[in-house]
Length: 90
Image 1 (cartoon, rainbow, N blue to C red):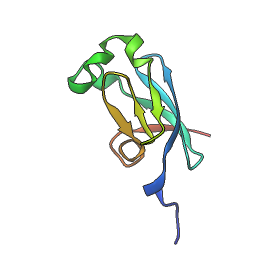
Image 2 (image 1 turned 30 degrees about the horizontal axis):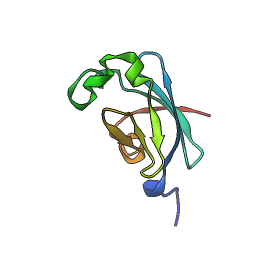
Image 3 (image 1 turned 30 degrees about the vertical axis):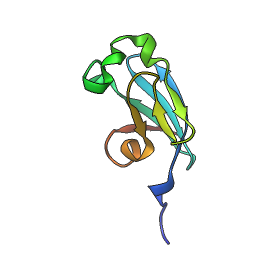
Image 4 (image 1 turned 90 degrees about the vertical axis):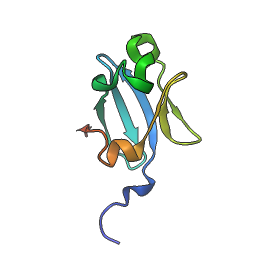
């Protein structure tokens, strides 16, 4: 097989950053930031209206998703598969 198989890429670390951004590290060794500001305060992301709630982000180790106590989860497939744009870090 050529190229990287991204179907099994998992989120291994998530840290909140200012302005509704997350610093993420993936199981394939890549890392980057994702900007979720456009989603804050809307629909299932409405609890993010409170920056303190957004800061409660963690990685759900059972599902390898980015999760919050009272709102949505976001998986690596949505982030790396085209649902959300990640600016890369080396």
